[in-house]
Length: 435
Image 1 (spheres, rainbow, N blue to C red):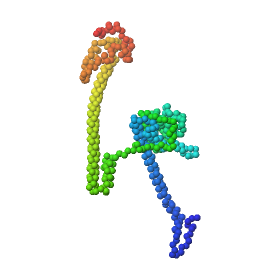
Image 2 (tube, rainbow, N blue to C red; image 1 turned 135 degrees about the vertical axis):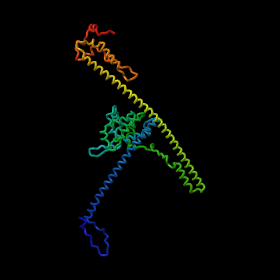
Image 3 (cartoon, rainbow, N blue to C red; image 1 turned 30 degrees about the vertical axis):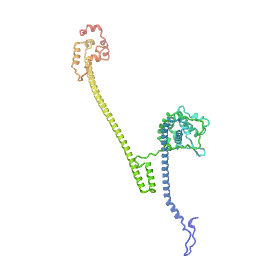
Image 4 (cartoon, rainbow, N blue to C red; image 1 turned 90 degrees about the horizontal axis):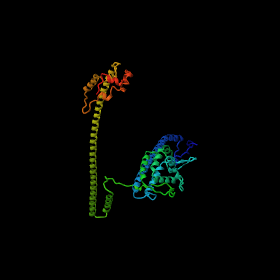
């Protein structure tokens, strides 16, 4: 039945109808079509705002946990020199609670056969990701008596690895197994972010502390999640640019409250005293700022002097290196010229050897006075430009005697019987001159 089928009863003249006017179905459908886009945009806007607020909440929670964990590690390092680190230490219990919250942050639930998702503890992730650690304690924790639930086993694991001084090693090994980490944690978890590596580096400092725990299972399986105590790390620090301190504000409020019940003279004296105290405190603050500025100025001046001295030393060293480079280049060029001259001289001698008749013996050729004089004249006419060094050694001293048999075996133009000259022939030869 539609709304259009219902006809209102006739209204008498002069009487007002008490019923509201009926809306036609056609008008109602048109109004619905007009409102649909607006409702869709409104729903999309609500979804985006909820998503942004959820992302901001997750980021704030992640930042809070990491910051308080860093503060807790520093507190443990400071207190370890004064007291023993065991279950009776409130700072240590608080650190264990913080670490539990970090490892359970955005941990995926375990889906059952019927599609229900049950909560999961970080102990399942530790078993899957830390199994490759050498000499791990996972099996010993699984075999512990009176430690049956996953929550108790996870807390026992934290205490055991703290006593073994291997907490950072286990966390680093778990982070390297990226496949298992993504399987157990949702997006936005601390263990999937870049801060997890910094967390493992922060936990290295705990290896210097000796921990002592009782692992009998009592108190490990608590009723609910552990609670973090933030009060030791909360401290209000008033800015140095503040107009007045807390004591001055309280004094001002007290003086303003007492002015209504005291005579005018007492009120005037109280106000003068308050102004004087305010001026004194401001002068003290300005003096403190001035001293800090002077200390910073002296430190910066000393740092500038140190950097100038280092710059001068580096400049001197650079000039010395440049000079040594120039000297090395010059010596290399001179040695190259000497080697080129030696090569040219060897080439001339090889040409002379090719022009020697075949029936002339090597000993006669190499020991002729004219040939010796030619070589000595060439060596005497050569002047090297470099000062302070020895003259170029003679060709006979560098390359060996030309009368040696091995130096002429590589020449294809000479026969093998000519290279082997008899000693008697060399002695009887006219070119032989004993030295």
